[in-house]
Every structure is written in C-alpha cells, then in structure tokens.
Image (cartoon, rainbow, N blue to C red; front, side, top):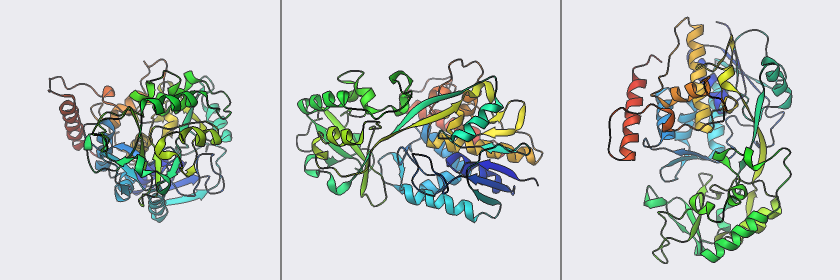
Length: 433
C-alpha cells in the first residue's frame, strides 16, 4: 500500500499518523524538531503542549468532555497518553506535559508502520497523499507554499498568548489556599485572593504596563478564547472579575466568604512543583510581568520558570478550502488537520487529526467515508470548518452550540448537556470505525 506523508508531529499530526498506522497503512511523519523549533516550543518531543497543561473539562456535561470521550472511543493516541499522565485538576483533565509528550513520541517512534523524518519541510509533495498538520506556528517557508495552493484565497492570522509558570515553593500559601470551584473534585487549584483595594491597584498597573512589541497586534484581532489578560483588563475595571479572576464558588477558609477577586493557579506537572497562572495569557514585557503579577499577595515573591509569551498563529479560510473530511476541495490527495484548519484547542486539534487519519485510511482501503454526524462533537467541528455559508470564519472551540438541539425538553442545563452527550456517544457507537 502506498505511503502517506504527514507533515507535523503536533497533536493533530501525531493522531493522524497513529490512526493510519494502526490500520496497517505506512506513514512517513515529517517533523522539523529538533533541528528547528518554533518560538513557543522548547523540547524535542512530539505533541508538545504550549499554552497550558490543561485539556479542559473531563465531564460529559461539557462539550470538550464529550469530545474527549469520543476520541477515546476512536482509540485515540492523544487521549491514551493524556489519561496515562494526568495530574489532579478537579473536573478538568490536566497532564504532566513532559511525560505526556514523551509518551506520544515513544509510541510514534515505536510503531513499525511509522517512519519519522527530521528536518524542516519547505515544499509540499507534488504527488501522493499528504496530511499537513503543521499547526498555528507553521514556518514561513511552508506557509508560503501553502498559500500557493490557494492563489484565490488567503491566510488569516491572529495572535495567541501563553501564561506564565511559577514554582510552588515560591507561592505564599499563608495568603492562598487549595480548593476547586464549588468544591468539585479534589482541591487541586491554588486560590490567591485579592481585596477590592488590592484588585484596584493591580488592575490599574495591569492596564498601564508595557507590552512587548508584536508586529501587527491589535486588541480587536485577539482570539477571545486565549485573550491576553491585559487586553481583557482594558475592557473595563471589573471585566476580570467575570473572567479569570471570578471568585464565585471559592470561599476563603479564613473568612468563610468569597473574596472580591481570586487568581487561580493550576498544577503544571505531576510533581506539583510548577503552577500555571490560569487565564493569564500575556504579552507584557518580562520585567513588567514580574512587577505587576507580584502585586497579587500570594505571588509577592513568586519565582517564574517561564514568562508569558506572544506568538503568531496562522489558519486557513477553511469553509472555502476544505470539506468535512479535512480534504482540500478538488485536490483530495491533500488534507489539513489541527489548528491551521480553524479548530481551536488541543483536544479539537487531536480530533481533526483523528478524523483525517480515519478517512484517509478508509479511502486507501477502498471503503466509503465515515460521516461523523453533527450530533457528535467530532462531526460538529468538521462540519463547522467546512460550512461554506460562514462568511467571517474564525477559529472555534468545540461547544454545544455547534451540535443540533435535542428536539425535546430536558430540565436543567447540565442535564440537557448530559443528554446531548449520551445521544452523541450512541450515534458514534453505530459507526463503522
């Protein structure tokens, strides 16, 4: 059987390669690391997580929780490695990033049907089946080659931000406490409270702090799902209190009351030695990050092992370019997967790679496509990125709004979402995978 070339060993590329290989199809996985890395990557491992170690909710009442379970049903490599290397984070699925990526790399390199080729890819093969999964940080050379595929279209760019990491030992636990919101799950988040006066001082400095130079950056162009905290702050004095600093469901054990605002820290590795500032994606200058974030009482003496960074993201005008199988319209040998298609988020990227791998395998086996229905999260995402009626296409996280309503009433939002998930998993079980 002919070899498939997969370009990029991130979550989408690794998942696509795995789905092909487990069906006996030979794959050449081309990855530029370790010879060349993007500004956001630091290790030689495949499937490296950048912005956060959290894969978000693991509950079926949440759309991304449903998406995870669907991937498990599809024998996903990414989900198997995530489940094997999870760290406690309440109702969320967070992982030890180093161990997670190392496990993906080991599985890929150990598969006899996958050959890994290292080095930057600067040209798209002119023949054969190719899945391009180079992610939102696609190199300039390959971006130009991709643009040549679509002379009548264009790339769309936006900027993405990553949050700082601090050591646990440097957090003042005398000013913070462990708890999960509403006491759900185990108490895995560190909660750093602020009084109204502390918050006002923090907010003022945050809105006035110096940003790093990022060519072409504008507040209006920031993707809402990963917005820099300083941009959010400039939208209003209390905006953060309804976003990453919301105190709802978090009672300070010292007072028995909810603080005015709370900064949450989430475990970033299995040892619990490093914590992520939840929702604090930023592109402030490094000295400014230390100065302003140190105004949070529990972080007064925080030791930063990584400051927040800002980097370019690239995605396609997919509704005009791709079909529901992530194939290039009228050029079916070429497929795309991952955030470059406009699916936003780690799990969503893996889902696109899973679908692309499954579909290409079936085509090579002479079988008909698997039409993941819109009732499933995997299908809903694929139909969103290929919906030609969408005019101003923007990246999208999976959400229940992409999935058709039940058609009957279920009391309570959580109960309704759980029923949508039950229906989705039932529909998935009926597919030949």
